[in-house]
Image 1 (cartoon, rainbow, N blue to C red):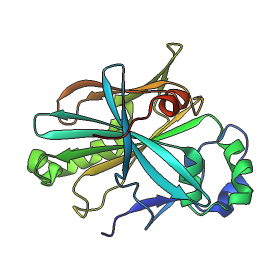
Image 2 (cartoon, one colour):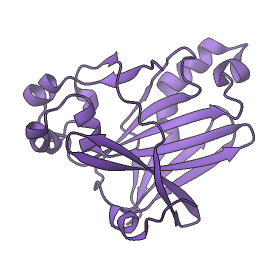
Image 3 (cartoon, rainbow, N blue to C red):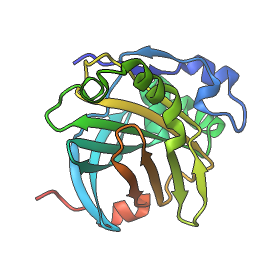
Length: 221
């Protein structure tokens, strides 16, 4: 299935990035790309959350993508914590350049956040048929303030950027790319979301640390 996806050129990373910059400091455009579809390799229980573990291969390595889902009424809210090195490799950054590129975006954590109707209907048409333009504007520009990230030591970070990957109904869900700055890539974190768009309430998605996942992975039943 063809979908739209953010693509960031490695040339811009290698020539224009400087310390403390983020992905959005550089020119971006849409292109076809791997979609991080669910490819379950296990699951763990953590702080009352069931964290599904998906696997994605890039270059010579395999990466684990933790995924948390919450089903509220007719909508599934899905958060995926994407390893930055995997993301960059899938954008075309060469393996030998990966360390230097990672250094320029150090402390940045990205997520995919998806909204899916239980029968895979078009959510935007279902909920906002009468005011589609206003709703598209909100999910494109206003929703960023509805996300925050809480670290293990209690610090709370605002969302650095939110990018709506609109595909005009090709995929059975709506997807955002979220970015946060100042985060250790392997630490325990909680993604906080206040759902103003669909009015389903406040949610939190608690992601275990990488060490916890590695030590507690179990095979799905």
